[in-house]
Length: 334
Image (cartoon, rainbow, N blue to C red; front, top):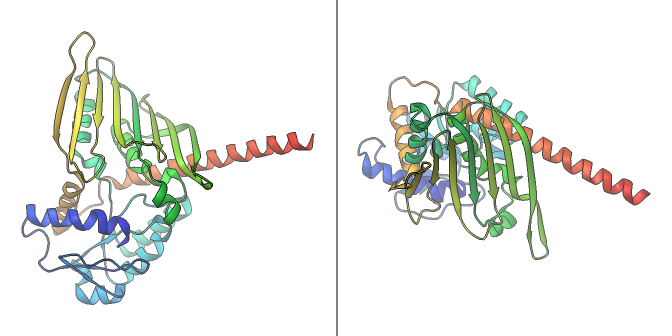
């Protein structure tokens, strides 16, 4: 279950059930969480184990949502596979490092799993509009992308410690979008900061920044600040002939996105539209799973590439920290 399962997946599945009658099986959703027993929610029943959940619903005809923190993902993925589950939706990121990614890949190949990573930003209405702008060439060539992801996350980061770094919280969503818009990339620079609240310090969970150079020549920058006093999810695309500024919904309070188009010498235009991305993503995933034969989800390679890049970013940040410590240590000796 996890926090994401209760706060995001369950409400979104209820929206899918209402919007597409017949796509989901009748009856309540079965939920299991060994660490945090899920609260009673209409349309859900609790299981005391994965084995009990498998007895409640036939695994071969069931989609499993794996919403645990990424560190525990491979072991639970293997348990689900052994119980007969093959269609599995996994929360992002797919893994936190290359060994974890390799383990997930091994389990997926061994059991023939059809894994879909929860990448609703890629499927959002805003991202689709941006992708159309890039593909059409309407504004000339894409040159630069900047993504800003700001939200205060002090309480949860200190209490849960369910993500090892700020690179693993919000940034995987943005990185997947950037890769889908501009193609494969290499890291130019990366940095992270600690989270500070009064006398409490949480290493590496304050802010993460990433600069990329894509094979297409596009340069991109992602800045995710988990100590910001305000919420913002924005993306700016610089073309030869225009600048497009998009704003994703920031919370469940309002599922609208905005897109502003700025051309030199012209008045800027602004579009505001509904963009409830996660239910739309789940509806697409379930429609694909309902077909007799399904292929690998198209975003899985992007997610694999995102884990590879984030692993490299964390390695660069750790090495930079070691160099700074070494310099300070040498200064103290002198």
